[in-house]
Image 1: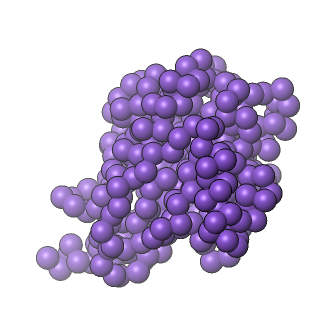
Image 2 (image 1 turned 45 degrees about the horizontal axis):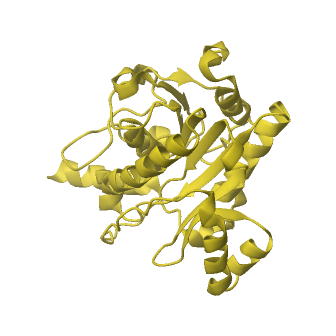
Length: 301
């Protein structure tokens, strides 16, 4: 019991969460398609600042819900015409209040900022590309040690994400979909990919804590699995344990996991993977745009 208690404390410290009892996870809410834009804009206007300003700026949301820690799914690009779609899922501690400004007011941590940077990189790489990037805070990420270590939030989030993926596949059947998960979000996208439509071709882990499987080849569907893990990322210190109700097993960034490695030049710490100028940002854009020929991306190890 002493060893298990120590593991919980270590996990809490390294994931940056508090030793508090978790709140009861809420059911994940599936996002809709572009018909939701005016409905969500009206909801943001009714919510007042700062959300009313988002609507006034013409930002487009498939989902907006300010109840509890909040939900939001923002779309960058023309989703109705996209043939390359990216869904970016954030990790522990992400809330609606920090969706735009980032945890602790650090902009590079904000899901909306990260998705916008990836969208701009995609267009810089191929200005003619028909792409859309979704910043998907469609679930309640864990903010307590028990939910963070046990994966309950990830499973609920994966169910909501899977519903969105089915809708995207139905609305844009010729499009390819890339799932990108940061930190705990890597677990969410990996679980969702296990039962995803064929349009989901690639899964990307950025500083991921786990994937729900011990090896990339164990992921159902034959999808390509990519991972980036910077030398300065504290995720490397998270114990790679998998016990009943605790831990996620092998990290995607561990070479033994067998993921296709992405370069991490210019990435500092846990939150810099999609920062402008980072090699990881360029590589993720290449995975999205190159598609079935993504093997051309080199292994940096």
